[in-house]
Length: 551
Ligand SMILES: [Zn+2]
Image (cartoon, rainbow, N blue to C red; front, side, top):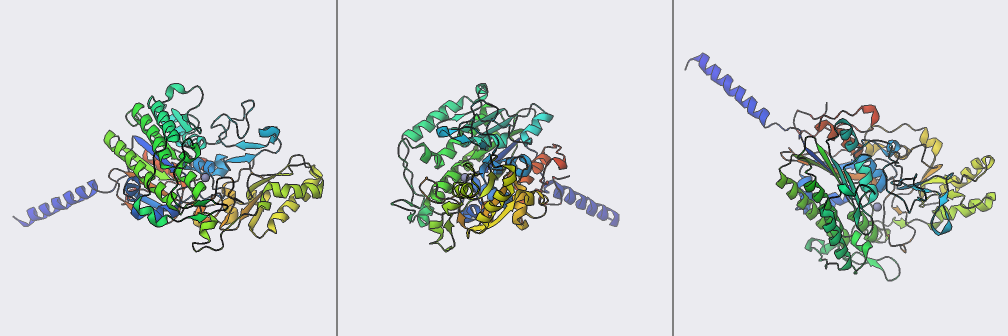
């Protein structure tokens, strides 16, 4: 071989190395189906605690492109605002979904027990005669922005969008205004909008029958071996305890909701729709949005660190494993993103015996029903003088307060909260409105920036109250809920954001991204144009190598 031929051979070898390196270089997925999952109250803390123990669907997701410190960055860390960010690219300030329920002090309606209802439920059709915040017709009308599915169907009506959830607001906020099918659990069965019965999968009848059987005659739940160390009774008042695995009583639909069986049936419904509607097999890319609610009900009913949540994590992992098996079998090219609508925090009774003595329950005097009479007496006002549905969050002055008195009443109400030792800070609506929409790492946002991210001038209150860290805003345990979320603190804001697709080159990014980043990221995978000024999020590069899915 002469020198020239040797050089040529060398060059060829170089070229072929380069080609094969390019072939195996990490690439963005090209999905025909986007599966977007919200696990209600699946905090970063829970993900981290159980991460090494997962063996099913969550193990796969933990080994994809993982952002363990994702953020629902806003202050109002509740179900409806959280679900509204996941597939809209927008924070609650823009989606308009500032809470599960907010108040309209000027528009009273007949409510329960003959009382006037000033509340508005986030997924309520307020135009229906006789509607109120607790007895309503489910609707996406109050969501002010389009979802991923809405945007895809506007470009190509052949795209199918299916949303299934254990809660009406979970399905509505992830599905959007123009879905192929929206289904939710109504307390007794999975159902859809009136008039859309033709779209309900045939398999739904069987699933509803199985749900009824599971409520009527629950199967015995076994404590998984890995949960034995979590099993310890914690007294919560009276004879009641939490922490050890309960057995459901026949006919107890609330206990069914707080069980892995509930998620399993929600997933069965999603998979029935996937099969019957041939999602991912049509001319356009489709969306399957799944919101699994049981983790939230378990957290509220029993707290997050006992045998109940551990058992729920095992069940959730298995349910997601079953989903992956069904998707794999179909051969449909899919991408999965899983996150949560908000995080969560354990109950104070367990926190105080597990290394967090500062944990406590909120003083009942912080409830609007505690402050209202004080203000009514001082200013000679009709009740309710002040409206809100918790001892924190958005508070509204009654529309019946005369204009000349409003500034003084507001000042007195704010002083009442500010002097309470459990209150961290109070912001007026003017202070929040004057704050710029936050930018930069969500982990560094100040409290007022967090409040700004869930402030909408047409729906937010006259002032906003944040309780101190570790104060649980449930004054006592007598209503069946012992633990919750909703605060601007990290335990309620941090959620994992996990992507997986076949052939993914895994990597982990421990720094914060926002759930509002999910929409522009998914849009980039399917060439969907989303004007930057219409959203708050940014496209996140999912490609481990030099390439990028983001333009
Ligand atoms: Zn909740």
